[in-house]
Length: 296
Length: 248
Image (cartoon, rainbow over all chains, first blue to last red; front, side):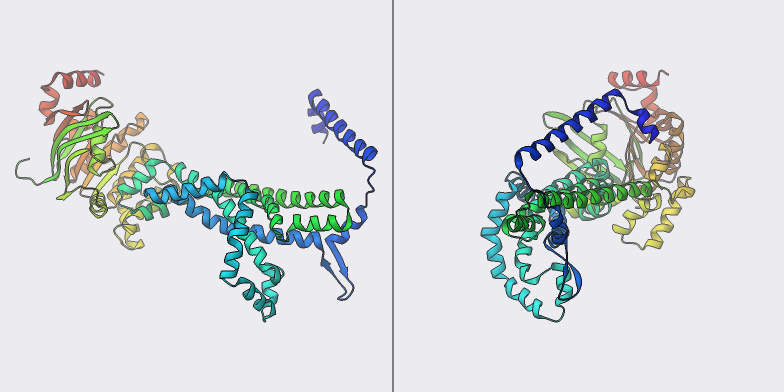
């Protein structure tokens, strides 16, 4: 600590002072003009609530939303990874049609705002698919079945399953374009000499990809993929627009019923921040471990 | 070489990279067991010619026959030829994510379809041959350049090819490591392997070559036994080239 103080230069002091002044000024403005009555005491109750009937603590709106967000992010990233790897490989193969299709997919999804993609998908496709596969009826069946508990643990309230599935699919579609670009960059980063060496041994194209290119590409794409996963967690807030009951949607609900606008949104911001920041710390640690293992 | 079977036949091959003509009507016949050294100034097309032999480059015109198989675009003939033709690159091109042993067993296991134990046994045999049996468990990045290039030679030999191609195998090496690689190549030449080497190591060429080929501007300018080649080259371009690289 003393070391830190000794290392401060006058520039640091000035910068810190400016930041502190700015924060204080904004705080005073809000206090003076907003005439806002802070009610922080109501927030904890919306995270955890004591259920009188069962005599135990249960998750309330905000925590329910957070859990749904985590679930959706998890499933969507698995799906996005699977799609993205296919797209990424598709962009590097010899066959022109495959390459063009993959490229079209990526360009379409990258150059349309996510909100628009989500609405288009939701109104045109999602409804059709849910009806076509009778997902609604299937989910209702499960909710009444024996293993309802396990399903609820995995997917939350089964009555909301159809909406959750559209959320997962739409998010995965959107993110898979970016994952695909990361995978493509990874594949292309493996030098031409590696492919030539594999080819001159007589390896088939599939073997070349499987044993030579992809293992090397994987190591290089893990850090950007981790970043993309964190982006996905943040982007998941957009699917509140199609009434998927994740954290952002629940916050909107909370605000409209309590009018605690600032408290609710600040709390939600904190929840997202903690979730994403923990993830990035975790990935950084894994990355460091991976690097030492490679050296060994 | 009369009476021996031709194993590589190159007939009137042209190669263009866009507008640039890298090979101009090149014809060359190489016989089984023959050791050919190709030299020439940089950009003369020697590497391109070598890479056409296992079709890392596709000729723009002309015909190429390797071990009786005509090289066309067809996938199955391509793979058959590539398993019979080993290639050693200037930059080694070892697989950095695999150990030395795994580098050596990948081809035999996936292409020749032999068992892991058999492939491992074979790999150890060839690591012995290139004098680094003790490095089997290491990763390529832990080896010196000369050791890496010897592993690359062993990797090609593990496929038990009939022909070995060397594309400037010592050009990326520090001077003190060149000889350990050349020694291995001289030993290989003694074993009767058909070899085509692009190199500027004229001492090596004198020692092992049956035929010297000099290329310039995409053409074969001279092709003769080493005695004649070094003592009385018939073309002026070849004489100038030799003067330039032999003066030290």
